Length: 451
Image (cartoon, rainbow, N blue to C red; front, side, top):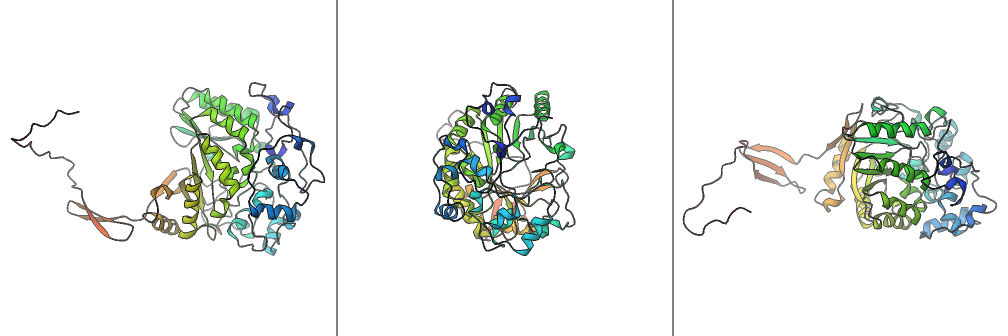
């Protein structure tokens, strides 16, 4: 079976057989040999002789690199392939950079199956090495609470599998489809909606060539589909060549009006946003990108530069954030994040209630907490900074927006409204929908003709 390997397996330089052009055979896009995943290589791999794009490195990352990777050169650190080869994927690797708690250690030893531990060295540099309760650290390091199943939780709470006409494609909304193009992420979030499948070594859940082709054939056969969202896993975990093959292939379908990419890579692996990638993406406009941000500490100089490259290429960026207990569930943290996002030209788009996946109870907040945050943002900052708060309805009902109570009721023909300060206002809103137009005045100037 031909299986799409992700960038964790991509060790070949541009121009090699593994990096054939978009016009090449499909098989040529799959022949990338596996590479080792040593934490710190004894010497730079031969392919690092190629030119690596410049990227700013924050003081925090520099300090982390010098402490834990003293022999790694700047060009290696800035190479997204190096970051992938050296992902931290085991207890021993994590113990080299973090003081693991007993709970984290037990969870790492107990884990089996999909949603493995995995994070890039860059993202590890953002974690507090001593505090297991740090928000960012909790989102990527397993805890024993993951093994507790709470009421209402399910492996597939959104019913994606029941809305999947062909493997890897979800057709829930009338005019758009979700195309799951990879089951690999460079960094795994512990609250992932698709924890049942991402990172799985099960061959039946690996992305295959025939799966891509069947999904594309389905889109071609359904002219009502005007919008295709590439997700996974993470689409940007694919090589430039494979991703371009997909984009160009879907773009040739006449009724597909625009494409979207859902990704967290700009926040966990900003080195991936290379000038070559950006030049390729801009060829497929209209192309939009939803970037997963969790906390203001993710908005680093590296991430700002990566997002700047995408924005300068004309790719609109929207942030999708999951509301998480003890991570971002207070107004001030959320305000810092949305303000930081606007400064790097990312529009806060959605704030999600944490989906009730199995083992996510320790992350979920009451719905009232999300409403409290929206109320604390609305009117206290620009409307551009206020995301839409939604629950993705269990069972496949789709996104349902929620708002604080701004309508206090009615008084006759007046609608009673409450503003961000809690003050009440009247808006004349007669229930009778018949519009009474007063007769024209006599005398005086003649009204001008309608335009």
